[in-house]
Image (cartoon, helix red, strand yellow):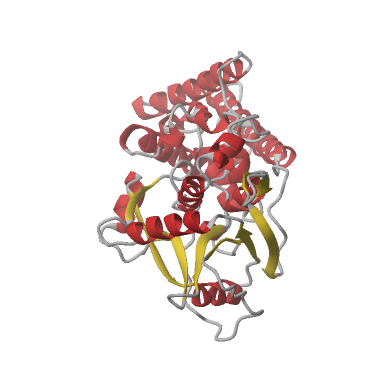
Length: 408
């Protein structure tokens, strides 16, 4: 992902935590790097290391390079046009940099025949040419780890793909995104809200290898032909080269439904209570405006942004997002026309009231649709966070209009 790829570190550490192997033959390794602190480092990283004793080189081929200083980087990121590139350079320099970041590093030596390693090296060197190294980045289907996966699959004659095509993994793109960002609540919530139903499809192990730590895991199940024609594991040996302080990649998806529902019900209750008291307490009217306006505006703008992503960018993960039924332009209208909640008269107040009622109606329709088979998405947190507040706002708009909560 633009948020799921790792930039290459500089060699912040001059000495390596442990010596690297130096076999007398051409050897390929898969290097897997654990989670880092930055959001785009939360998904881990990997690279292919080719040890070439004849040339005296140890090149690490890294597919996760991008630069914030690229021309129009921010605009391209917003549009979903992210340009990444691969490059090979000293694996020692790269590993020193990752270790300096405190990220765990695992190394798997691959049991490839010499000619297979030569073919892999030739492909990586070809890919490292300036005219070949750039590629169009996709969060899930064409990222730094899937490029490594594809290169390794070439080296084992398609056995990796064949071994990971079935069965369906017990996880989705959404699950893995939430697992990776579980320690960063704002990123967890933002990505969870923005992802549409396409991210809820069960994945094959091949597809979930967009997470480097899962590619590392699935590679252990692949076999290749040994020197005697027998099937041998493609991973000849593996070890943890550097152990960072952080935990490993989680195998369960963090959920915060109870917290989100509690916050949503609390906000809805306060809006309803303040709306009911607005007839006899001007301070309640002020508090209602101070609570409802930013709440509606923030979530409305967030929903509008996701809607624009769906309509006008290549961020296909936002397609068909059901959360837009609960947050979007109608919430913005209510926030900008507060007279609908404060007993205002005139056209603006009427528009605001109808916007509030429309938002409530969409919430009810969306909630009903969620119960239908084949419709909806995994968004239980946002059902509890947003729908109660939408209903409370609609009730207050009705109450002040009918006089049930007459404003003085």
